[in-house]
Length: 440
Ligand SMILES: Nc1ncnc2c1ncn2[C@@H]1O[C@H](COP(=O)(O)OP(=O)(O)O)[C@@H](O)[C@H]1O
Ligand SMILES: N[C@@H](CC(=O)OP(=O)(O)O)C(=O)O
Image 1 (cartoon, rainbow, N blue to C red):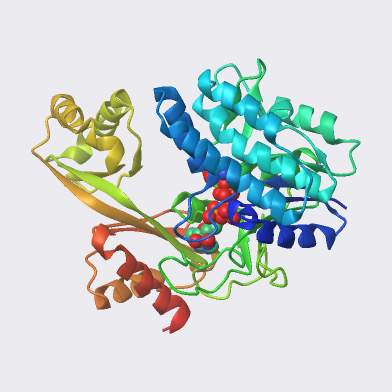
Image 2: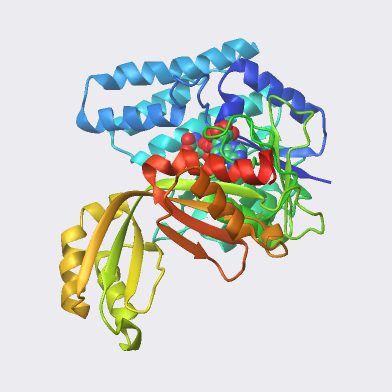
């Protein structure tokens, strides 16, 4: 039996948190492969070490005087953990190399990766586990794309005879040694890759909440936690902003048929959430979860007889493709279509897109609306329950929320709703209340 256990930044922000992690690992001898993140926030006003590293590197690039100050702050974060754990470990040599590399402009990704690298060294020393530098096993190809095949081979080669190891999250390297990172929150991906490559029995992902919650605890106080969720449901929710697990962390374990267990470092007695391929367990509520994001805009296009103009949609989408813009949703009517696009992506190219669409399809009318949010209501139980959409829209009407867009996927696994940014929290709360609190 072997488990891969990933601990997020919130679980490793201080010596006190490290001790909880140590207790968790020692409580189960199958927790053999440990993937740590960089130290996260110790309180809500604190800064993650990864963010300090980005800041420090930018200062180094500009030759700014802030460089020494931020580096000293980073060193102090690690020293506080080392001292609090009573370890004799010194990171001085590592910091000398880091300083040198920052000054020689080794790259932002190298800089950010040091957060996990250094925390991995502390973790290995604290547990008495072997430290394995992820640059040796997590491989990116010549174009900087993650190379799954090579990574699997290297990971198995390096780790197959090891009883246990600490493998820092978030980064890997190209064949020439250039360090690359995943996108933010990417230690979840490292954990999943290692679990997949080693054919682990379970991938435990330890964080600061007792599992995947029905909705974001920053929107609803104390939301219920989800007992079991399928990979497909989870993918919809994490894509739409439920940040507890990086959306790309699903593929490697799913492919290998390994379940994920989300657990709370501060409440290890809680069972957390099991993420599985399929389950016959009935969900506790009709919906499994609600997630959402702000910051979208919509582009409404109207043209008489659009429906019979073959190639209309393709021509519109080609304009977006040419400008390198992706779209999120594309609901359409007989003479109308509406594109939902990330506002920050669109803002820079808005005029090129509008004139491009004019040239491509000569519409009768176009209208742009900004500051919109998208909400995903997800659940495998929605398929077998009638009236789900009616309940959602009744709840929104009661809460005085104007619905801008509705999109139900043919899988019946989710309904996407567009509302104004300012209505976002109220809308999430209204949907949560009707399905979970009151269950009307
Ligand atoms: N549906 C959800 N369930 C649980 N947590 C969520 C959800 N949506 C957003 N979150 C947020 O995700 C946080 C955990 O993710 P993250 O901050 O990346 O943790 P870590 O530092 O452990 O990697 C929680 O503290 C919570 O604020
Ligand atoms: N430290 C990196 C990677 C990561 O996964 O962190 P966390 O586990 O704290 O989300 C980041 O801040 O993005």
